[in-house]
Length: 164
Image (cartoon, rainbow, N blue to C red; front, side, top):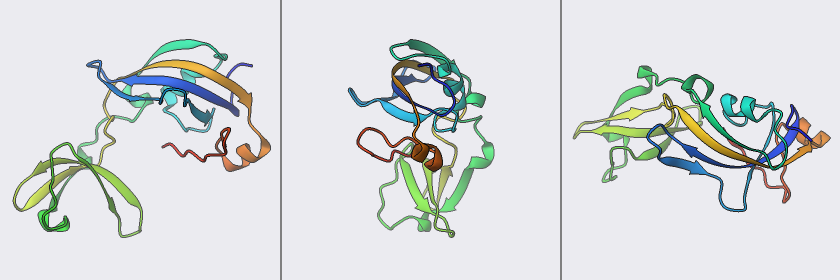
């Protein structure tokens, strides 16, 4: 069976940024399982996996516009230091999360810290990056009616993995 829309695909992958640093990989023996054609992985990778079969391997280079987009200067915000818990150790580059007034969790990276203010970066950490994936398709199957209804695979152990 070949990878096509509405197939459940299992992949082992390693993700590198332009300088060759590995920033993500599937844990050994735990492939990522997703529903093809439902935007659960970056569009550039999803497009390249289309038509591959079980056992196939591919080296895929994905441009920012087909991954996490360009870095948006509007994503940099300066917030008062008082917005952070007193005594919180803030390190440049550290990933943190906060809740919006609407109750949604937002992740951000600490960009700069002064006594009075903290500059936070709301851009995805991989925004603006050219991504290189080494991918190995370890499984392809048709999705069940329930998986299609829910819009994601349920995996062998019925774990619900939600990836952005």
